[in-house]
Image 1: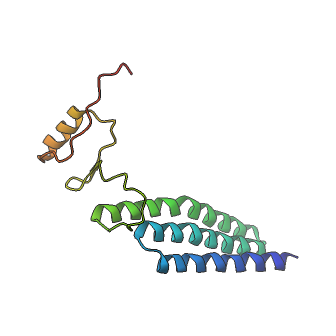
Image 2: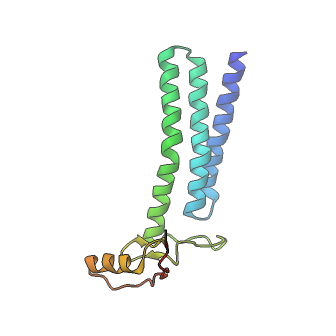
Image 3: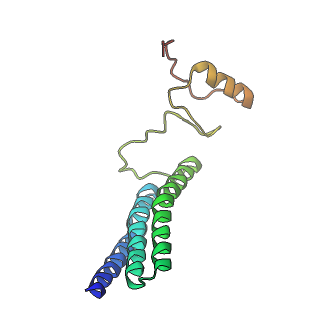
Length: 147
């Protein structure tokens, strides 16, 4: 029975890795390619490690497989976010079918600074004076609040 479960895990792992490869080849832009490779590729690798843990029932192998699974679960989304952010900052074009570009209004390509809307105008002016850069993005001035 265990052999059938291992076979099922390995076949499904291969299927998800094939989907990740097809997504990288067929999808139109960096964010969608990254989504396919991160989700399907990570799931495929996790299934391989689960199959290895079932096949080699030694405690050392199972412990290492669990550690690899946790490592993949932690690092795959962070790596995808870092790659996507770097791609956006260097100007990799988005697909025209993308719904909206939420960073366009709050990103300064000269300083690579993102304005979240929580900064006060004085804080942004001080930041620009420290960098000796002319302001390009006009921040929304917020009213003095009590919180």
